[in-house]
Image (cartoon, rainbow, N blue to C red; front, side, top):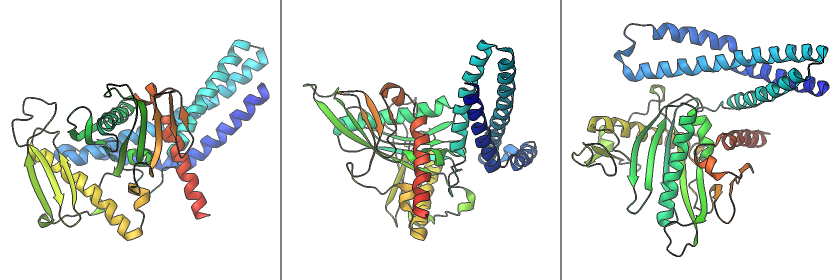
Length: 371
C-alpha cells in the first residue's frame, strides 16, 4: 500500500507542477497585484460595468491562486504525514492520508481541466440560450428543466447569473430563455454543453401515460468585450417594445418595458424582458445581439462556426446528451460516453463530470485534427 501511495503521490506532484507551469503562478501573482492596485482607485465605481469586470476577474484569479497554493501545501503535508505514520505503524493515520490523497486527486483533476481552456474566447463570461425543440409541451417543460439545471450548477459553484429573457409556453415550460453566467472561463466551460439534449420519460401531460421523447437545444456564446469592436450602426437595428409576459413583480405586464431587437442585415432577433426598465432591457438585448454577431463575424473570417456556435443540425442529427427517466434511469453523453444513473442529481445541477469529460474530449478531438 505504501508503494502505491508513493506512486500516486509522485503522479499528482507531476500533474500539479504541470498545472503550475501552465497557469504561470508568478505571472498570476503579478496580475493579481496589478488588479488590486486598480481596484483601490477611488474612482473605480464611476464606470460600474468596468468595475464589475475588474473585481470579478480579480476574485477569480485570487481563487485560482489560492487553490493552487492550498493544493501544493496539502500535497506536501500528506506526503510527510504518510511517511511519519508508516515509520510509527499508525494504521489509522495511514488510512486518513490515503483518503486525503484521493480528495487531493479529485481537486487536481478538476483544476487540470481548467488548464485545457485556452481557446480564443474560453476565458470569457457566457451567454446561454435554451430553446424547446421537437416534442410539444414536453419539450417546453424539458427546456425549463435544462434552464434550472444550469442555474443550479452555477449556484452550486457560487457563480453569479443574470436572466435576460424568458419566453413562457402556453401550457407549461418555456419556449426559450437567455441568461448570462458572469464568471471568467464560463464560456470555455459551458461551450461543451452546446447541442441538442434529448429527454425520454412518461409524459406528465399525456392522459394515457405514454412514453414521450422530446428535445431542447442549448446555445452558448462568449460575452463581447470592448476589444472585439462589434459596432452596430443604428440604422441596422429595429427596436420594438412590448409588455413583459409571465411571472414577475408589480411592473411586469403593466408597462412596455420589454425590448425586441432585430439586426436587419442578418435577421438575428433577440429580446430581453427581465429588467423593469426599458433602458436596462435595451442594453441587455444589445449585449446578446453583439455576442451573436461576434460569432457570425468569426465564422465568416475563419469558417469556425461549428466550434463556437454548433452546426445547427436537426433534433436527431445534433444530439449530444440523453436523459432517460423511463423505462430506466440514465443520463448519457453521446460523445464522451460519460454517464450517470442519477438523473435527479444531474437535473439539479450535478453536471461537473459531464462538463469535464466534454472538455477533455474536445481537446482530444482538436489534437487529433491537428496531428
